[in-house]
Length: 237
Image 1: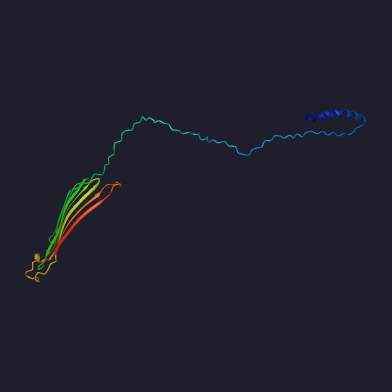
Image 2: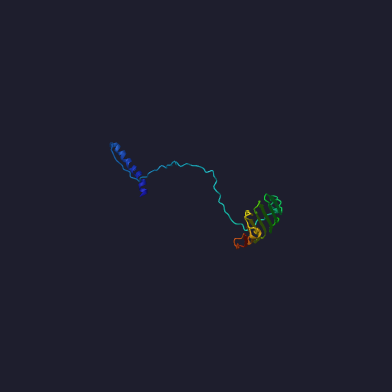
């Protein structure tokens, strides 16, 4: 079919040539020839102009890194020098005197004395003893003697360790006061101030002791025990 259509136009031209020559002699005529063949469209190739911007990236891409484990110990040739332990150096400590003595006097036969003796610096022991006296006496014309007296003696000691501390103290005090005068002429002749009394005095004895833990470990049991004994007695009159 394709071959017949290909040679059909050539065959039609051959038929028209003699007819044309004969007709030219007789006269000009009209003849219509229709040639039918397959339509072959022709498409011209076209290129579309792109409007997308074109840029070049100057940043190099990140390299693909791979991490792994090396099963070996590196060898070090460097050996650091030994560091000597540091020593704390504080300020120089002031001198401590173990004893103290104060004595004084004043009007109305006033006398004062205070003596102390304490231990020096120690990480384990602390102890000391002290005594104090203060008195005064006054007697006016035709009146009795008026005065007072305060006395105290105390000793204490303390032992300290990393685990516990033990402390104890013993104190004795005596205080006496006389009535502020009395009129001698109005008193009976047999009045004896020392016997009948013209004042009061009392005494006090006290003993304390305590035991407490010094540990800073939170898992240890912390405790603090103390004991005190006190006895007071006196006389009025």
